[in-house]
Length: 226
Image (tube, rainbow, N blue to C red; front, side, top):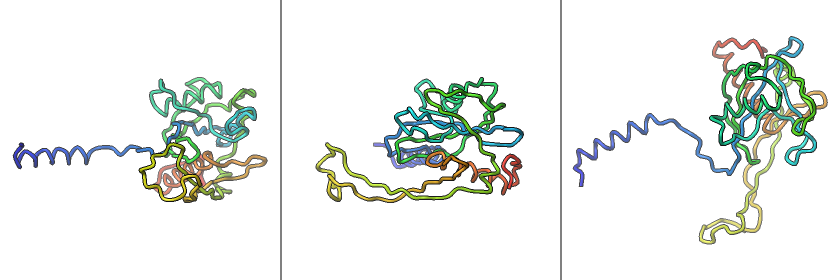
């Protein structure tokens, strides 16, 4: 058995290692890992965000408004690489036409995906024809989001055990009925005929909060000045 001094030394090593470790995500949702690019672009000289309208022929979220992106594939080295790859493919742009800025905050969504958003700048407005994934593109001036801001709605969450849930786990409630839980916020805005909401709304809100914080800390952010 190790002596007391040896145990103390081992505990001190453990303390040092524990104090220096980085906090990472410990997911509890069986989500798909995805990445998107939030594309800044100059449209007719106006700083804007570029959006996709998903094809109406898709099985999942047809016609929804989103940023370019998709599932993080096994051969993607990072969420950044996945976001840039998907953007190049969807918008038919070369790598040198996209300037990478950096990450936003990731979002673990209750609808089945965890999103790692990244910010980038497109050197031109893409001219993508209707495809299997995209119906069309549109832009929104950045200052419009400053003037209008995002509105908030709420969606209720409910849970129930799946078939085969272990009988010896003391689940409180009827296992065959939905149990109401908490709510989560849905951020949305209306721009012309477009309703921008859901995960995309969350990402926009986070983008605005980050740029607000940069301005408060004297970082020059002229693209989306108030």
